[in-house]
Length: 276
View 1 (cartoon, rainbow, N blue to C red):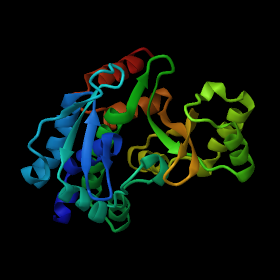
View 2 (cartoon, rainbow, N blue to C red; view 1 turned 90 degrees about the vertical axis):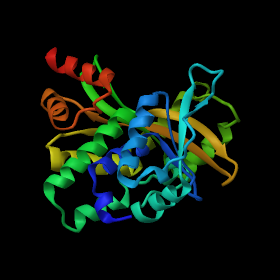
View 3 (cartoon, helix red, strand yellow; view 1 turned 180 degrees about the vertical axis):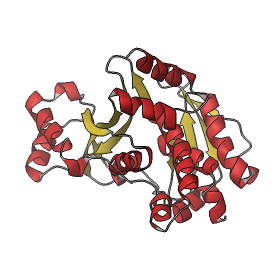
View 4 (cartoon, one colour; view 1 turned 45 degrees about the vertical axis):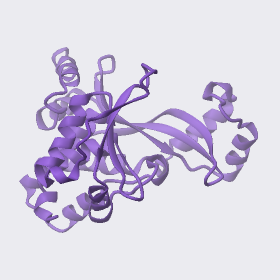
């Protein structure tokens, strides 16, 4: 698959959607999952338009968690050959994302470092970011800001690790842990070395190529559980990459915005700009 295809802005759209809503295994098993069938169709079609119909299975999206209204969603499989291509040529790490803490795909960083056609690169980034924000993004009407959210396993020292192990039991909810223990975990999560690598790199991309200032913050502790395969305790926190202040929000709308069919977020974005 040629480098020209990788640099096609439609592939940027697919990759942004995949980063938000896709999963990939070591064997290349690849799927896109979302509650919105239109999102799945648009993201998959973006890849098909560049690489052809052979990269996608003929089966329609399959419902998941049919009996649970809160968890109900759809998934659509793409070919394992295409999945292996994403791993080997684009630099996508397979497996659980909260553990591997991948930054932007290697392809993006290599393209930027090797010299590039500025306008083509910015158009590609715009498509990537539109899909990324429509997949995991939100618009807050109250705080007049926009952003994306991401979960990540945090690193913490052995003293805190032993304390959490002593408190841990399977199925225990965050609110059932002592508040001081959770505060210790939050303090660790706020340290810059625990910030998601992707968010750190996106923050720089937004600033350099779109003149948009953003900020990373810790949303809170999401889950605590034992990973039986690795026999380790996982503390998953969620982080937000926030874009606030009127000038930054307006630049996002004018230079990037959400995907064209994402009317919900586009309308909310317009409303927080018009209100000010």
